[in-house]
Image (cartoon, rainbow, N blue to C red; front, side):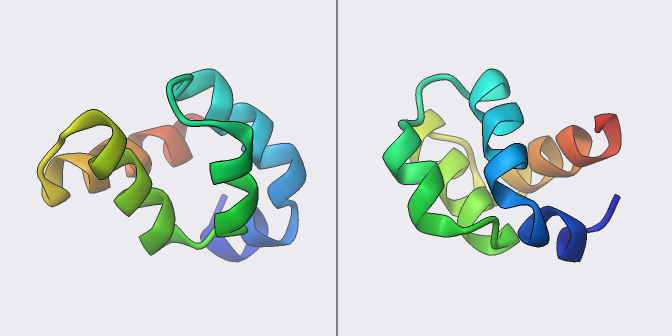
Length: 65
């Protein structure tokens, strides 16, 4: 799956993201519309990860879809 697909079906993907990163609110997921940089930034901010760690975590999540 690629990010164009994720952005195109973000409402469904946001539910899957909420399952993975439960500390991020539904409003926060809705506001980013599936844009990869914003997903990474949100995971980084909420969980206190370094940027590269957050990117790996998001990429691992994508591969698991």
